[in-house]
Length: 225
Ligand SMILES: [Fe+2]
Ligand SMILES: [Fe+2]
Image (cartoon, rainbow, N blue to C red; front, side):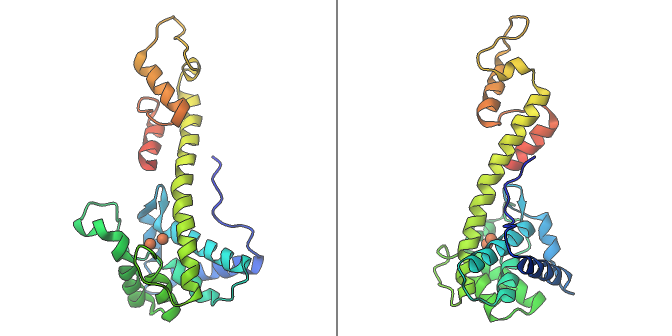
């Protein structure tokens, strides 16, 4: 399946190396729970860990592209830990209803406890939800993450749906009788199964509504929307 490329592969080689080194450093730190974020979902099928890596890539890409001088190590470390809140906010708990406002503070406290992060990282983490949290960052690194985070959140949400639909359509070709994927056709024996045709219609238009087409599709569909 073709994926939308978030990774900003056009970063210069030395910056890609820096990214890899920082990810390794954060992941292998003695108190790190960075890799635990892989079990929590953020947007669509993107995990929190993957989202944080995406944001770090995009922030580094933006500051490089526009020639903004920043402390790259601190910015990347802040980006990698900006959603270090360590729970699944999709679970139903009363306090998660205000997750959007509370998680920067939670992530910052966790990051201070586990990594002893500095002032720039704290600024990056605590202000990344601006304007939802109405406090402006004090550093350029803090501004970079605001744009990077929004771009990634939008991209991950939309891209995930695009990919899910594309995948569902591709799978549908495998599982469904081909004539049903064409509009307005009756079945081979002249009988039209109303329910089957309704589902085929949905697949053709949205790649959704495919409960009977196969377990793989159903699972994918459930995860994606
Ligand atoms: Fe966040
Ligand atoms: Fe985020």
